[in-house]
Image (cartoon, rainbow, N blue to C red):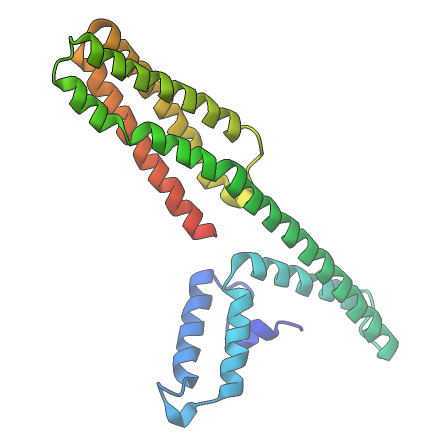
Length: 238
């Protein structure tokens, strides 16, 4: 167990993720049959792939490093001598690994729950607010002083306000996982921009001042960008 994966990739435990990735690519190319038949080594390729599967993922690497550190502590305490001590060391490492797996499973369950119960419905509600704006403004542009057209636009804003309230309630219903902190931040600021945008558009319906209309459009545009950033951040994690 002791630093096997690091030795397999010819890197030190202090290597950065970029250095680990570079080492893996170099070794994979060196031993791959399509790259160089003279150096093909299927067993070596398997070890390299196994090592990178652990070290290439920051969370897996963290668990692996913790396990190495724990084994080091056991050896320092005198558990490394004799067959019985080796069994104790192995049993302790296995118990720690099981606990880490359970912790990882709990974290993954939390992540999936937050995506399903918070991210997905909030993302949908925000889209239902943002997407119709252009068509609504185009319809209103035919005659902003037409009472029927203005009434339709105000109904749209009322729907936006209702959806925004629902989105905020859902967003606050469950703490976000640490791994999705960036996603949650994008959604939080997105909802703030939507709220401000609705307010500006409501001001326009009261005084017909185009500056409020343009500001509302710009705030919705910013909100749309934050929504896309949240989507991209989810793809990086999941």
